Image 1 (cartoon, helix red, strand yellow):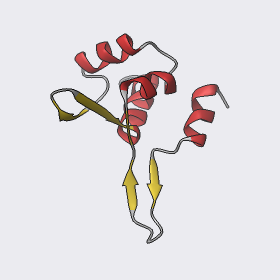
Image 2 (cartoon, one colour):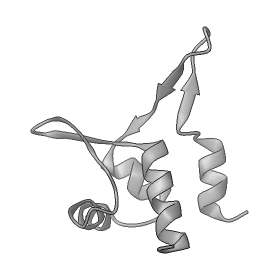
Image 3 (cartoon, one colour):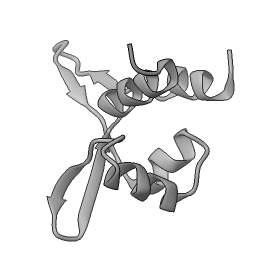
Length: 81
């Protein structure tokens, strides 16, 4: 298991409430950069290139859906089919 996989295991992208409903976890640019072991500027470039999806909360607040970002990174690792 590499570092990225172990980080994913520790910080799952979807949490469960007491009632069993799923809650999507949104994280900051700093957190997503740490998750993939890259600089925050790299995250900005990936967003600009359409590699990572972002969630715009308002004009000053951008967050990232961990589940969608993990899927995007998995597709990037596998390459086009």
